Every structure is written in C-alpha cells, then in structure tokens.
Length: 111
Image (tube, rainbow, N blue to C red; front, top):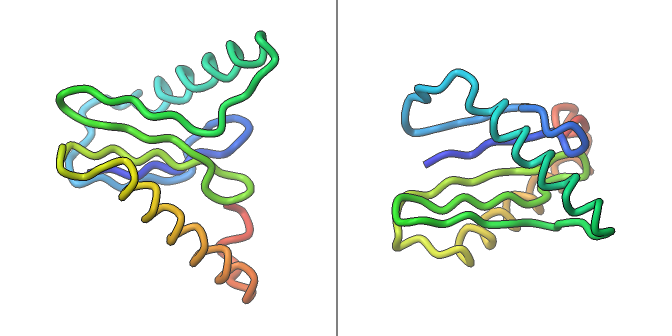
C-alpha cells in the first residue's frame, strides 16, 4: 500500500509512494518523531534496533535499514501478505539498488 524512505540519522522523509491519498499532512513528521523517540529509548538502555514491525487488524508496517544512509517503511493492509514476503522483496530491491549504485548510477549515492 505504501513505501516510505527515511534518512538514517535524522529520520527525515526522503521520498514516499502510496496507493491512497494521505489525509494527514503531518503524518511523516509524526512517524519520524515516534521512531526518533524509540531510538532514544533504545539508547537509554544501551541497545539499538535493526528493524521493527507494527501490526494490527487493519495493517502491518515494517521499518528496516534499506541502503547505507536510509531506512524504509512498508505499510501493507492485505492480511495475506506475510512479513517474510515483505522482507524478501526489500532484500531484492536493496540488492538491486546497491548493484546499480556500484555501476555508477548517480541517483543512488545519496540513499
């Protein structure tokens, strides 16, 4: 349903794509603040997170590292799509973009 790319350190929005219109104009700022607070909580107990998933009856959202300087969030509302499928697709996309970057594609270096 939705893919969002965040900068790794600041968790500021880089880009997003969604099948539906986003009604909340501050949505990405809110998500960024939630993740930054979670990262701070992890730091207080001297740990970090690699990825996490939020799931309820309406959707599942997965946030994980994407490229060296970015995190990706994928939101899926179809309960038939399993987390493993989302992770496998992200792995394939990550590998493909990393290969393009190695070949000198200029757009991938900032991700």
